[in-house]
Image (cartoon, rainbow, N blue to C red):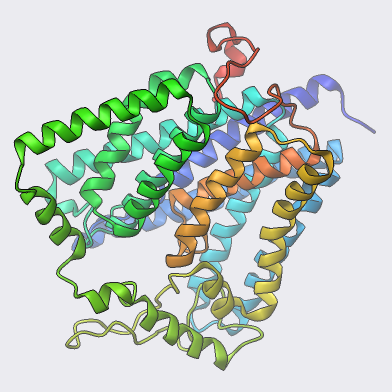
Amino acid sequence: MPSSPVRTSQLYEHLKLALGVSISLLLISAFRAPDGMEGLQSIVSKIKILIRFSVLGGLGFLLLTYVTRNRLKPQLLWHVPFFGFAGWGMVSVLWSARPDESFGQVISLLTLILVSLAVSIVLRRERDVSDAIRFITLNLMALCLFLLVTGILIPSSHHMTRNGMGLGHSTNSGSTASLGLVLLLGCGALWNWRWIRYLMVPGCLLFVSVALFSANRLSMAITVCMVPSLWLLYGSRRSLGIALVLAAVVGSVFLISDPNFSSISDTLQTVNRNQSADEISSFSGRQQMWAAMWTSFLTSPWIGHGYFLSSQTGELEVWYLYDELTGVNWTAHNLWLQAMVSTGMIGLALFLLAMLAPITALCLRACFNRTWQRIDSWFFILLFWYLLWGMLNESFLGPVQPESVVFFFVHGTLIARLCGNLKLESKTASGPTELKSRSSASWTRQEVLPSL
C-alpha cells in the first residue's frame, strides 16, 4: 500500500538532512592524529569507526525505507555494479592477509555508495544541485582553512607536509585544494549562481594557499592544466579580458620585484625535492611501484589479494632507501592497477562496469538526442580531473578522503540525470548565462536549512 504524500515528503526531508550530515562527517573523518600521539590516535580511530557505522546504519535505514515505499528501481539498478564490486570486496576478506583492514575499507566503500544513492534520489532540480555543490564547497573551504591555520600556527601537526597523516599529508591536502578550485571555477564558468560570486574570491585564496603550501607536484600540474582551459572553453570575453589584465599586472609587478627570477628557482628546487631528472621522468618512483604491483597482481590475477591489499602477505617491499622504509601495504598509485591487484580481474570487471556504464549512457544520450546541458559539461570537467589524478595516485579506492566523497557525489548526480528525475532549468552549455530561477534570497527556510 503506497504511503501518504505527507509521510513521503517528511521522509525525503529526513533523507536530505541525513545526506548533508553524512557528507560532513565523512569529510571530517579524513583527518588523522599526528605521529607520537598514541592516545589521541586511538581516540580518533574509534571516532572514525563510529562515523562509518553511523553513516552506514542511519543513511542505510532511511534509504531502505524510502526505496521500499517509492519503488525507485532506476536509481538502484544503476548502483548495482558498485554494490556488486563492494560485495566482491567483502568476499575477498576471506583470503585477505589483513581481514580487519580489508573489512574496514569495504565498509568505507559501502558508505560512499550509499551517499551516491542518496544523492541520486535527493537531487530533483538544478537548484538542488546548486545547493549541494555550495554545501560541499563550504565544507572543502572549512577543511582547507583548518589545514592552513594548523599548518602555520602548529608546525608539530605537520599539516600540508610529507610527514603529515591522513588529510594532513601534502598529497591529500594538495588534491583537496586542487579539486576544490576546479569545482568552484568549473561552476563559475558554467553557471551564474549567486553564491559563486560570494565564494569565488575567498574560496580561490584558500585553495591556492593550501596548494602552494602543500607543494604537491601532481595536483599543482593538474590545476595549472585545467583552470586556464576552463576559462578558455566556457569563460565569457569579459572574464577572459579581466584575467589577461590581471596576469599582465602580476607579471609586471613580479619582474620589478624579482628581476633575476630567484624566487622561481627556489620554488622549483622545493617542488623538485632535490630529485634528479631520471627520478622525475620515472614519476618519482611510480614506475618502480607499478612494476612491483604488476608482479604482485600476477600471483593472483583472478581474485586478487583482498580488498585494499597489494600482496599476499599484506606488505610490499618497494621504495627502499638505506633500509629506512619497512614493508607496508602500499597503494598502487594508479586507480585501475589498485582495483586489479586487490580484487583481481573479477573485481576489475565489476569496477569498470560501475564506472563506464553511466558515462557511456550519457554520451550516447547526447549523441542520439543531440542535446548537451551545462551539467553534462560539469560532469566531464570533474571526471577529467579524476582521470588525471587516478592515473598517478590512489584516487577514491584508497582511504576515505575528500576526493572520494566528492566523486561519489558526482556519480550520484550523474545517475539522477540519467534517471530523468533531475529537472534542468538551463538548455545549453554555451556559457555562464543567468538562470531563470528564483534567487537564493527567496528560497524558503525549509529548503535552505539542510543545505542539500
